[in-house]
Length: 362
Image 1 (cartoon, one colour):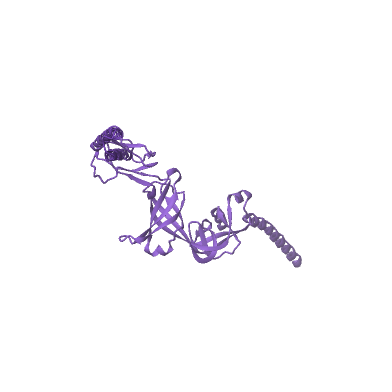
Image 2 (cartoon, one colour):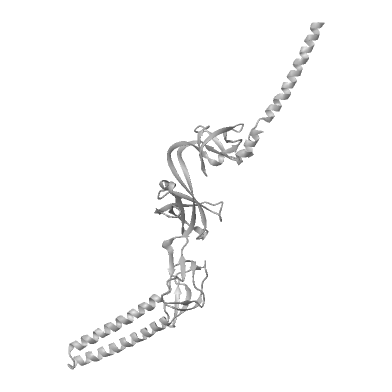
């Protein structure tokens, strides 16, 4: 009887254990992580590759107009400013009227024009009379030559005055009209209606600049000077457009240091479509350059920092995703260089990885 009781008890234990295994296995399988098709469409995968290590130098700069496309407009005559047609920031066309100046110098030029025209008329009449007398053998030929010389001098004086009128843009009134020399924007204005201008005024009235292309002037610390090369690509960011990157390149290195800041200036040229970059805007400049080292590289956004470590999600299949710690040699704005933890050809999750990482960490 004792043996029968033991056999029955053993059978009950076996049945109970089998039942527990059947209940436990589905529970374990139900907790296994697997990406759904909809989640697969939301993530992005990138392949680990070995490439030349790049470095990044961040500088502080300022947007300025292209000096080759900036013209300062000076007063050619003194006088009283009667009218100003434009304001700071206005877009103007070549030849557009900017201001009107009433000037005594212009009145004097008109007098010179009248005198030159009168002198030429008299000289021509005198030449005609002298030629008639010469044909009649009443005067020698040298008087005809002298009369022709006087006509030539009078004509030259009239041409000179006309050229001055053309240069100054003077009309028949005693007013001088200031016109824009190029298409562009008014980026500086130093006169108002009623301003008295002296003929020896050394200050420009307006500054007109074209800003379809602009420069960014940036300061380079003395220790970073050896890293700078002409033609280096540059990424520009501004406070006004924090989510947009403007691309340019270094086109000039000023090989002198500011004695106060001990910094060297560089110039970056870039296109300014839509005139979104304004002169005097502050800019952050990122310069990228290569080093003599090759290393495994992934997008920097694929790296997750947690528990004082850097992690990367290595993707094998929808049901096999590994959260793997990695050692980062350098992490730039776009690329991260990995010194250990990954192998070439492996795929990492570079979009939507935080959601997956949190699910795997539970």
